[in-house]
Length: 311
Ligand SMILES: Nc1ncnc2c1ncn2[C@@H]1O[C@H](COP(=O)(O)OP(=O)(O)OP(=O)(O)O)[C@@H](O)[C@H]1O
Ligand SMILES: [Mg+2]
Image 1: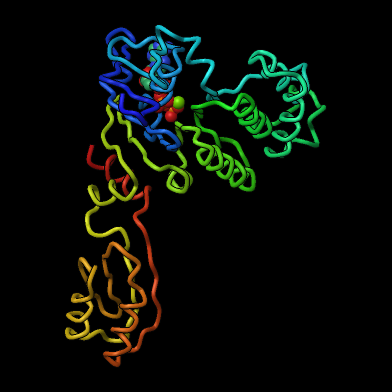
Image 2: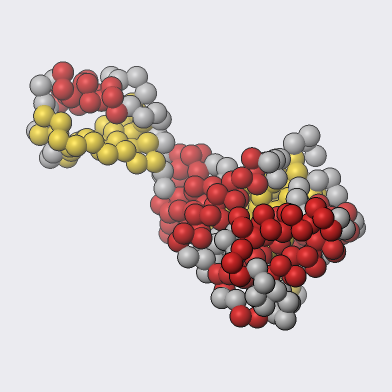
């Protein structure tokens, strides 16, 4: 384990009979990273998370969480991880607050500290007003929010979140993404699974794409974009009235420009930095009329679709 690796797996494999749900997963996640597992239904995301938590035993290979083996040292791992399962379960006859008090007690948090923290967390996840209501009456999204508070109550070193934004309304999603990013700022390592590519792109430092138990791609969105789509990180589209070959050649000469494609009234420029000012100046200096400019980064959606179109 390198010093910063909080999660490390070596050929981690899970078979159910003849069926291999996770096949030789090799993964390294460093402290404070937000790592996203992506992949279609049944790809092995939840199974991978369960092995890391020590909740299901690997068939072969090794997992380590903060240096501990989740199969051999499950209690040590449980002490330092928080887990938001795919289907969050709470005591329905207890209120939101009582459920969190129960978790706090299980984790030996002193009562006074716990009470203050519970109130703060209920506020953070937007459940203060229903703190005294029984969870049995909660909607799916409210339960999901409570689940996130439940993960955070013990200040975990590592948080495993299985589809953290599933069922949450758009405003709630923003709050959850902010919460996840604030966890990472406090050096909490977050491993999540999600089908929400746009959200994943916003919050994950790195992603791993799983397909039928195989990790088919792993890296930052920028790197995956480069590998899967090619060209630079940014694509700038400049609408220009009648671009001339001379203009195209001048833009090609701008430092950092990788490629220029032109169609009737637009130029598509691939580059690794936001070169809009330099490009605009070149267009204006050439006496062409610049109508509009747009910039786009690699989209995770595009990368994801590319992997699944080809596999
Ligand atoms: N207990 C089990 N017994 C047999 N097969 C299982 C078991 N748990 C999971 N599987 C199978 O392993 C594969 C991976 O399942 P997993 O739940 O890890 O997928 P996932 O990527 O989390 O999917 P989803 O996006 O639907 O949550 C699936 O084909 C599933 O049917
Ligand atoms: Mg799952």
